[in-house]
Length: 59
Image 1 (tube, helix red, strand yellow):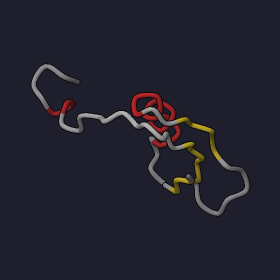
Image 2 (tube, rainbow, N blue to C red):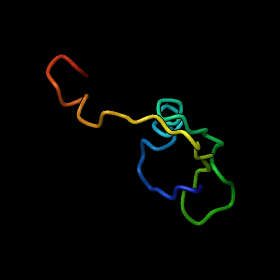
Image 3 (cartoon, rainbow, N blue to C red):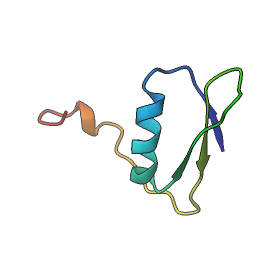
Image 4 (cartoon, rainbow, N blue to C red):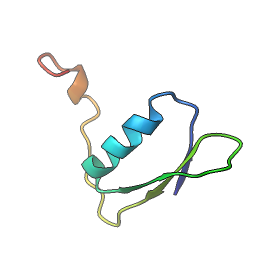
């Protein structure tokens, strides 16, 4: 899958997020008009608790 994003944290967030969810980060794609990153989507993704960061005691 290709993810197109101008989010400034994407180069850090995507490589960290992929292992948490079971996906594989393949890296940025060169020579694109917009920042584009390649991911290999898992057949068996792991769920992530999106609200975990918002709970007291979590950062």
